[in-house]
Length: 283
Ligand SMILES: [Zn+2]
Image: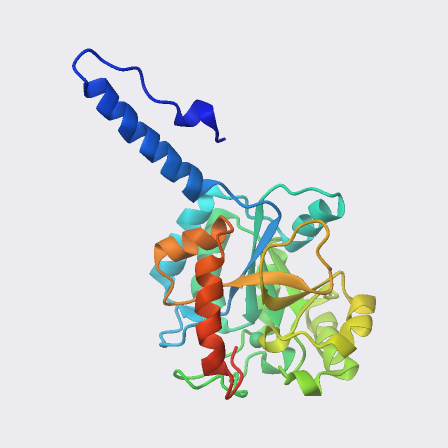
């Protein structure tokens, strides 16, 4: 809801107080309009760790994550497949999809109870070689101790709730130049063997698209997401879905801006971060 009917001034009183109240209401309404109007299409948020206790930008403290869920109450959080169903039908109704890359066990310990209590759907993109193991790969320990992968039984528990979608994030979280069909299929095989489901969604390690792999990925998955910043409208290439990263250092206003599709600040920030990433890969 937005527009003139919401922003209209209140009736003016005889002593001017009404006018003052009216202006205040108008400003509040305008601020609300700017702040709360959800962006068209599907916004896929990228989380990695929750409450892991590190200084890693990709490790969101649990109270911060809980606040995110409060802010999400004003948005429609849908499963990835539902967001894609809507896009396939040409719909632009705003939606938010929660995605968690890698499959770190602090997500099960800290995020999952909060998601379960609120019945919020989410996707875990799993790097299957690290199930119940230390998640050590290039850059993963730079800002503190490495995460530990969730166990198959933890994944099974989340899957059984009907809230969790398990996606493919390769088996060993390989660098873009080492991404092969075998690497992708090893993850799918492991998920099928241990969880009895076939992943229909994929996300690239570090979010870096590998154009040579696109035909193979299109043949295997309904969607392929990336770390490319943006929202997804019906015309979005299903093999290059854009996402929006969430960082430990995001102030609440910054996070809220991401939810309503104001990605300018994030774009500027990501540009700065890119320089720092040039020497190595993260996430
Ligand atoms: Zn990853």
